[in-house]
Length: 219
Image (cartoon, rainbow, N blue to C red; front, side, top):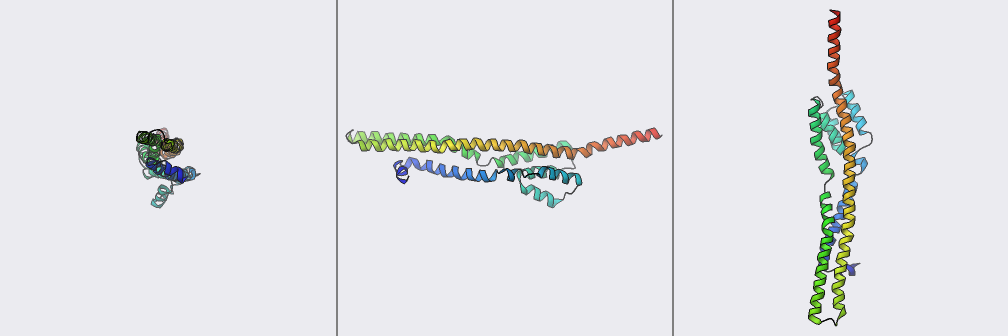
């Protein structure tokens, strides 16, 4: 393998750097985007139960916010639970944009690596072909080893560029899809909490109207 890398020439160095960077991003995103870390099981129902029983304080909200992306979203709604529904919804949307941005961290870099991998391979191909033609110009076609070196460098760079870019592209699409699925689930949990927070305020006017009607009938 070392001989192959050395045969690729200096043009292979950027491809190797990109491959190491892509590997680090993939491992980090696999760990950060675990379902249990993003959407802890039962967290939505637990938070709604807290809201119904009014067992909320600063410590609860702080622990909820730091626990997971879903917890951060729900904590943002609970922090303004006494405000009108529209304001709570706006806070959820604002927080959701920040949460999604963090979940998509490094994915643009991974997509860039997937894009430039073939271009770097093409660069190595061009460099290898140039070396081959220079060797032919300097010594003629009587020495096939010189031509073989240039051709080998070109083929190695092209192959390594594709080897890096294809998995990077596939994993970039996979992580994007995974984040999109998480966003849908988080929206469902946030909507359920928003409905629970809005229900008491919606029921209060009805109770007041019923009480006023009963008083009028008694009079």
